[in-house]
Every structure is written in C-alpha cells, then in structure tokens.
Amino acid sequence: MKLEKNFLSPFNNQRDFLLSHLLPYDPNNNKAKKLENGLREYLLLIIATEQALEIVAKKDINRFDPLVGENACQIRSLQIALIFLRYPVDSQALLSEISRVRIHCLNLIENLDRIVNKRPISDLFKSDIEIHLNFSEYFLIQSYLLTKVKISKPPSKENPLVLNEYTDIKKIGEISHIGSNFTNKLVSHLRQSLSVHSVELIQSLAYQLEMDQTVKQIISADFVIIHRHLKCLPCFWVSKVVIQAAIKYKIPIVLHAQLKSQDRNYQIENEIFLYFDATLTGYQNVPLISLKKETPAIVLIGSTARDFNNLPSVHDWKKELIASGPIDIFLACAATHKQYPNEMAGEEIYKDQIQNKEFQFYRKKAFEWGCCLQNASRFFWSHVYCDSIENISLSSFETADNS
Image (tube, rainbow, N blue to C red; front, side, top):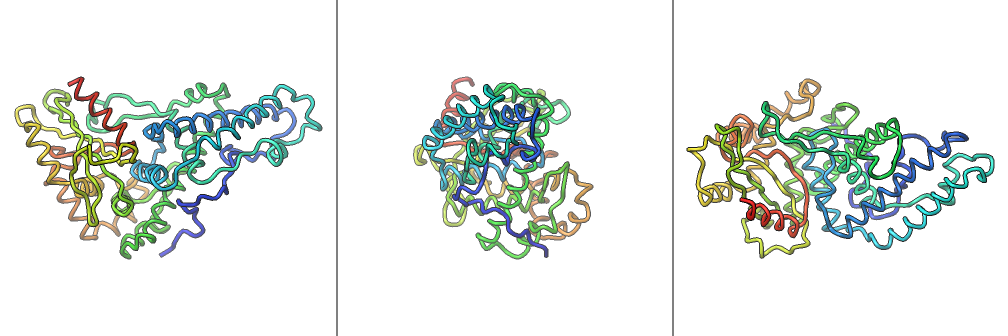
C-alpha cells in the first residue's frame, strides 16, 4: 500500500502559504513587458482575497462552495466546516494588511516606468507585495474564486435529479478586468490545487480517526486516479471518512429534502429541512432551537421522487427520513454514485472494492431504500455543502413562506 507522504496538514495554522502561489505560472519568468500583466493578475488575487475575507466576516459560509469537477463536494463541505468550527480566520487582522498591499500594487502599476530594470515580479514579492497566509485562508480564497465562477441551472430533462452546474470564467471579470487566457489557467490551477488538498484531507483524517485498514488502503495513493488533471478518490470511501470526521468533530448534518412528483416533470411539491446533531456514536434528530446559530453544518440537498398519487404526507415523509437517518442515507447514496468521475479510468481499482461487504451492503440497500438515481423514493442527494445553522434556518423560513 503506497501512502501519500508529506501531505499538507488540514489543521496547519502557520503562515506557510503565499498568495503568489495561486498564480498559474512561475513569477520569476514574468519580466519586462509582462511585468504590468503580472501585477494586474496578482492584483486580481489581492482583491479576491479581500472579498473572501469580507464574506468570512459576514459568515456567509455557503459562498465557499467551489465547483472543482471530481465529484468530491462532500470533502469541501467537511473542510469548510472544520475551518469555521475549529480554525477560524481572523479576517479583520488580515484585511488591513490586504488593503495596504492593494494600494501599493496599484501604485506600482501606475508608476511602472520607475521600476528599476523592470525586475521580475518575484523580486517585488520578496519585499513589497507578498501576502503570507495560513491554510484556512489559503483554502478559502481558492474556494471563493471557484464559487464565483460557478453557474447553476435548472436540472436537465435527461437528469432531473442531478445538479446542473458549470463554470463561467467570464465572472472573474466581476472581480477585476483580466484576460481570458489568464483566467482559464487560473481556474484550472485552482481546481488542481483543491483536488490535491481534498485528497490530502481524507488521507490525513483516516489516520487521525484511526479508521480500519480497509479504509486506509482504499484512500491511499494506490487508489488515487487523475481525471482531467484532478486527483480523485472513490466516492464511497471518501464519504465514510467524511461521516466519521463529522461525528468526531460534532458537526451537525441538515437534510434539505425536496418532495417531487416524477409524473409531473419532477415538480417540487414540498420542501423540508431536518436537523441532526452528532452523538457519541452517530446522529439524532433535534429541533432547530437546540443548535447554536453560528455553528457550521454539512447540508445534504436531495430529492424524494414518486408519482404524485404516491407522495407521502409531510408527517410521514419526515418520519421516514428521520428513521433512515443521515448516515445510512449518505453512505447508500455514495455507494451507488459513480466512484470516480471517469469510471473507465478507475475500472481496475473498482474491481478491488466491489468485493467489500460493506460497500456491497450499502449498494444493495440503496436500491431497496430508494436512495439512488434509479429509485429516489426515499432520498437521493445531489449536492453537499456547508453553511451556518442561522443561514440554513433563514432559507427554511423563506421556503416555508413561498410554499
């Protein structure tokens, strides 16, 4: 079993990261006529950092919901929850430094002719405009940028229960006007970076949580595949680590369920939010009032789909979902989900896990319980993200008012 070595700790609070590392090129090569471009591209990162920190201060956690492209939203939901719960960012302290650097960077652009010998932008970083970040800040900036370019559309007719999202790089221009060549490279670079951090988080947690040897093996480097330059791990085993970490660190889970009539073009007939708090061994349904409003929670948004005449009452629907609980629902959905974005790329690896009894159990039960795309009669989750209990409750009240 080959293990990833020297991976970055998801709990590192030292300022070991540099904002310039988010540039999709080596700043040492950016000289002469490219110096102005480099400064303007770095300025975009400075402004994005400022905007991300302002969002942190407002605790609008759901604005850190990046579209990476390797079917691992559940990992980012956990990482974001851990950051806000255990390693919060001191946004006010950093904002003053960001403001100073932004003004200095603008002055450099306006007085470019005075820069001696058109030295490379990397020299300016060493003394003037570099920003040192801890892991939480570094991760949130990347997440913000990849959330900024995310566009959500209504589900397609072919996949009415599947989230329909794509990337629009032109939205980067809302932060600062910059060329499309740079924005394409930046988005690609950020995706690769977050995919690496996601794999490292799961591998680190599997050992910290002392999970069994099977889990450690299947989330090791031997089971990592590369899909469109993104590192990927199998969905079910990632989800096992996520759920164990959520229990360990007492992260609430919220089921945001939409009741849909499949014989009426999957029209939404009702919508509910169910809150679950972590116990020593799992999760229990609790009233909203028992949870602290600032607490980050992992939100599973999904559908219960049946023909209109077979839809349950709201009372019975809630009872079914509470009886199932978030753990079994989460793992059953994960077992029938594509284990990798490209199943063919992971075909040989997939054969190894297909013999696992737990994986087979949840895969079989997903069809029986109604937790898969082919049978979503109980609950099929289409997305996982993180938000504060307060924001989620406000959404639930808005939903109730509009129903």
